Image (cartoon, rainbow, N blue to C red; front, side, top):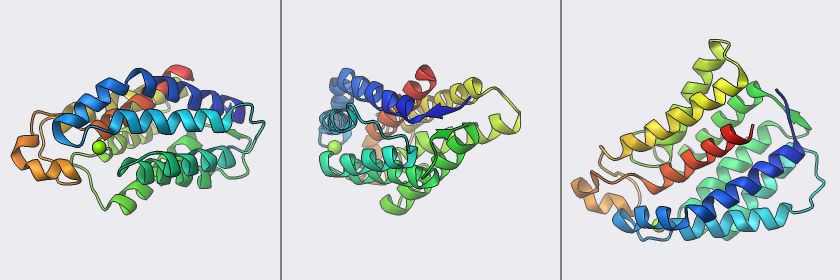
Length: 208
Ligand SMILES: [Mg+2]
């Protein structure tokens, strides 16, 4: 499997559609433990990405991801903008100059994105953040590649692990962001950022 720039742009479009479809859902999740703007922010940010990349003939995948990240930083409010923006920019730096990427590239991009998010957000796994979806997904990708699974199965493992990570965020206390003010009362609620991250893994799996 190798993916070109056109396909990457197509995936950004589908992510934008998914964020629009899940706008209310993400907003409700955020309203329970945060300030209720996550759905609106993500939808607005990815619509801007879709608009930015429309009719873009760029073939350098690193450049496409950089544009995506920069657009998210300037269009997504709250903590999510810088975090998602960093993730896409770091992933892009890993593959700058490449016109095609494969599953091994995907693993490196994901690792770079996760490291960027951790550094930027000063968060770790089990803090009840997007990291609780992304880190299990990266681990699943690494394991699946080591087991020589097909790229399709690697991406399925990533999406499944991300969704399991989202479910796990219901069981833990928030230690980052506005949700952390709730302390124990954040238990029972799933993290909106982890949820939007898992949605992205679902789209990548479905579209590839
Ligand atoms: Mg919020």
